[in-house]
Every structure is written in structure tokens, then in C-alpha cells.
Image (cartoon, rainbow, N blue to C red; front, side):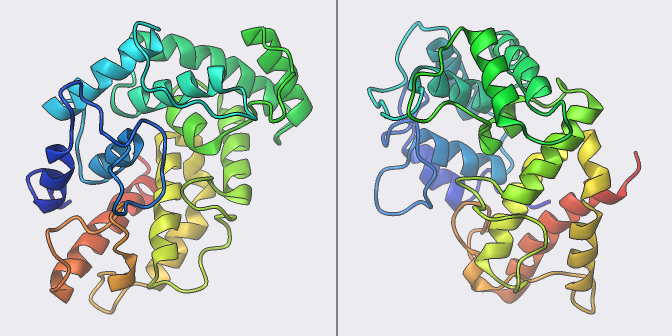
Length: 283
């Protein structure tokens, strides 16, 4: 896969990182990057796509601050969203991003295990049961259902939070639910069937959403449809090209420029091959 950690896109993002490891646009926010200062979530999502890991100093610095926020030692920012149990949603987001880069971090792992209990109850029937989820949520976190929008299953954050913590049955049920409903902030429509047009930004968003599921062994058996569709849309030479419109500055581009069609194809092919390796490699 293309190593873009020293490329143009990474340099632009890291130039905005603050001394505390966060970004100036606040913590929460996953709209496609524009003229506004980057949020920490936008930056982390993009850096993950560019191949950054916990071994990279900017990620370590950010994760250390997020852990401090999760522990209640400092506030991540002053933002507070009404109409949702924000006092629980904020630590859910913090823990999810911490585990995205450092799955074994003790504070995030302990918090994730509590959410795993809720998730096991919410998907015990083989499908998402909102009433069972809410009852388990209230019992585990001692939160009365007194909010206009109770904190239900949030596909993006729970998918990042729970790898390695669910039973195979709960994993399978959760994956079925995500495929049927999509991932808010990433691909806000069902992931099955695949997009209508292959060479499109929608396919890039679809791949971003599917990549969240590759941390779950039980997902492999359900993603054959995606692998088959990608194989069907390969070029005669075995490469893929999502077209220039897929450059959303989130998943793509990874190389410094897509002015060269060959470079664009390489970025797309590397990304798709990584997904296919997960789905098709029995190991």
C-alpha cells in the first residue's frame, strides 16, 4: 500500500496540529474537509486512511490527550450538543478513536467492555432491538431514558470501539445491521447492494464504511458480495480506478496528486486490494 505518511496531505494536516495533539476546529465533526479549520475527528480519520498508526508521534500525542479527556482530567472542548445524552456520547467518541489507534489502551478498553455488554443485549435476538438496547444501556450506565434522543447504536463509533469484545453471534448481527442501514457520517445509506456507479465518490464512501467492519472476523462471511462487485469492476489489467471524483480528501487521494491517471489507479488499487485481502484470505 502507498506510504503517504510523509506526503503532501499528511504535511498539511500535521501543520495544523496543536501542541496538545488536537486540531483547532474542535473535537467532533466529520463533514468532508473544507475551508474551516480541521476538527480532530477529521484529522484522525484522514491520517488513518494515510496509514498513520500509534507508532507515529503525532498520533501518540493526540491519543494521550484523548485518554486524559476520557479520564475526566481535562475537557476536549466546550462543545455540547442538545437533544442527545452528550455526557455519554462524548466519552463514547473519545474511547472509539483511542481504540482505533490503540486497542489495548486500558481506560478505553474498560469503557468499551461496558459497551460490549450493552451491544450483546441489543443484538441478542439476531437483529437490533432498540428496547433491549435501551434497557441494557440504562442498567449498565445508570442513565434514565430522559433525553429526546437516547444514546442508541451509533454505527461509526461502536464499530471502532468494539473489535475483539463481542461474541461471534453479536458480531454477525451487528454487521448485518450496519450493512442494512449504513454508517452515519460515512455512508448514510444501506451498504448492500453496492453503489449504482463504480467510478464515483459514493464508492469511496462505501469502501470507507466497509473498512470499519474489517476489524471483525465474523464480518468476513458477509462481505463476499462486496468482493464480487469489486472484482466485477476491475480493469482488464487487474487494477481499479474510481475516477477523479473520488478524491474527497478523506479516503482519497493518498498520493500527493491525482493528475496522473496511473497514480490514481495505484491509490485505488492499493485500497481495494487491502479490503479484498481481508475478505478473501482465509488466514
